[in-house]
Length: 451
Figure 1 (cartoon, rainbow, N blue to C red):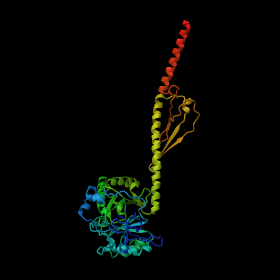
Figure 2 (cartoon, rainbow, N blue to C red):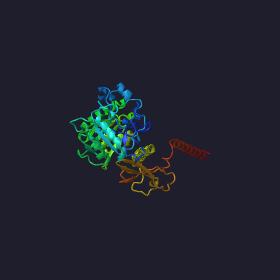
Figure 3 (cartoon, one colour):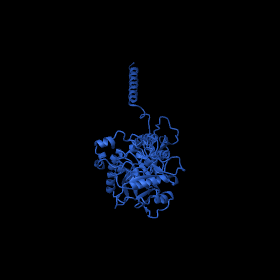
Figure 4 (cartoon, rainbow, N blue to C red):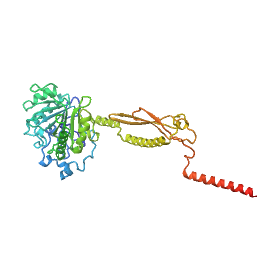
């Protein structure tokens, strides 16, 4: 999948490429592409407003994946850079509803602003047409450049559209205006071409090295790992990975977007930041394999406002029981469960109530543990049963436990005695007193007899 052309913002947390939208529907307008070294500044030149394509790399070493080698590139711009993982990710994707990817050449030849480059006519004209018709489009649209190779599945001029999950083949600069009018403004089919349905998952990794070195260092390393894992897992034809141009948020490199159908069939576009090669197998297993979001790297989602992205993540964290309060609560309950298991083991060895559940020792406090297990939810709730009146000197340790499935329960309790309740020092003292008393009594008896 490719990185999108994003709307600009004055926020220091984002450096989004331009998005095209209906200005009557929202007050957010397309913004220029950031030009500062960290990608958080913006230029006023309207030619820079469309999402730029991934930049050309400065040398072949970047393509070889310096980011994973511990080289100076990695320390300065790669996964070991000082600011890696230091910023909050969630809510850093500006709202948009449609993502258009133009397949065009490769990162080695992409200039910093490929959509505005004089000699890259197709991306430049498509960007200009989107800008000119943005007020007429019903959907807020991002434009991103992704890699294209003639004679392959993604040839130069191919256009991928999400969430529509369709591909148009071989768009030329002669057809740009008609394409934008029919497909992106009127939501019709483009007559010169037939839309091809897309299936599977599409992964786009920002590799815009000429735009920002961090993306140029991290992107190729991630793509190499994705391709390796796809081959190892036999996912060819099911998962596609491609480098793409600037999507906004250089400082979050490695930046990854994953498009695909969720469990309920809805096409989603999830953005991830600070992705490392070690995270690639996890994304393939959890996100693509199980449809689960990796929240620690999640930036946001196509179709959600920034605030809604934060709320969506908070809901997931609460459901998964990983909020700070839930963590503490779980740890306390787990600790209590271990103590309870120890008490039960002792009860099984020296338990009272064999066949007699009416014994007073079995009327001590009982604690019911109820476990509810769901595929994405693990909540442990501990409830105290009502207390019956305990007899004097009877221990009230909780000793009842219900299994996780709630299928069976059992009771075991310890018969406490006055002797067991005494400490060893008390026992010794009592014995000494008793011995002394007996000695005095015997001595007194002999004394009376001798008199």
